[in-house]
Length: 339
Image 1 (spheres, rainbow, N blue to C red):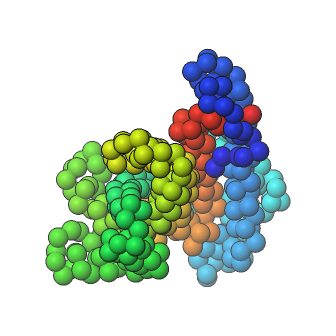
Image 2: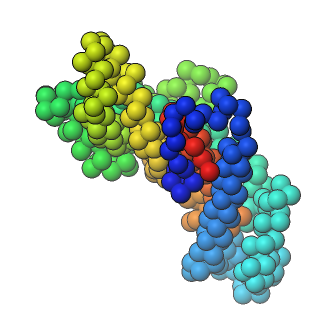
C-alpha cells in the first residue's frame, strides 16, 4: 500500500505532476517501489527455502520411498544437490531463475516453468472472477447500508457481513457443492475446462469456486465500503453540496464516493492479496488446477524447486498489485504527490 513517508499533500493546483508534464518524481517513486518489491520477493523466497530445509523429512526419501536403502538415498541427494550447504543451494536456484531456469521437479522430473505456466492461468481466472463477484455484491450492499443507516437494509447488510466473515471458506465450498451440485444438479461440483476450449463449460465450472471465494471477500469489503461512505457523508463539503440543491445522486457519486475511494481501493488491494491465500482452500475443495493446489502438493511432497517457483510467482503477483494500488491513489486524489 502507499508509503505515507513517501507521500505528501499539497494544494490542488500544484499537484498533478502528470498534467504538468513533470514525470521525474513519479518515475523515481516507481523505480524505488520496484526495487523494494524485488527485495520483498527475494526475502519471501529465502524464508520459504529456509523453512523447507528445517521441516523434518528428506525429499530424496520421499522420491525413493520408505524402503529404499541409505546408499540409494545418499546417491540421489548428491545428484539433486541436496547435500550442498543451504546458501549454496539457494544461490544456485536464484542464478537459475535469473537465467529463466526454474529447475526440475524432484518427483516427476518435469520442468518447473512448464508446470507453472499451466497453473497460472486457472488461478488468475479464479481470482479475477472472485474479485468481480465480491465487488458486485459489496458495492451496492455497502452503499445502500451507508445511505440508510439503522434501516432494515442496513441491518441485513451487517448480518450478511458477519456471516461472511464467520463462515470458513472450506465449509462454504462444501455446502455449495452439496446443495447446488449434488441436490439440485445445477452446476458441476469440481473440475476445470479451459476458457478457449469451451467458454460455457468454463463458466459452469468456475461459478461455484469463484462465488465461494468472492462471498467471503464481499462480506469484508461491505463493512469497509459502509464505513468509508459514512465518514464522507457526514463531511462539511457533502452537506454544502446538498445545501446548494444538487441531486442526491450527484452528491453521492461525485462528492461522497469519489472521496471515499481512497479507503475503498486500499481494502480492495488487501483483498486481492488475501484472495491468493484463500484460493488455496477453494482450489482443493473444487479440484481446481491452480497455483495454490500445486504449491500445497509441493509442500506435502517436499518438492523444493516446484514450491519455490510457485512462491516466486505469487510473490511477484502480490507485489505488483500493491504497486498498482499505490499508483492508483495518485489518479484518485491528485493532492497526493510522491517524493
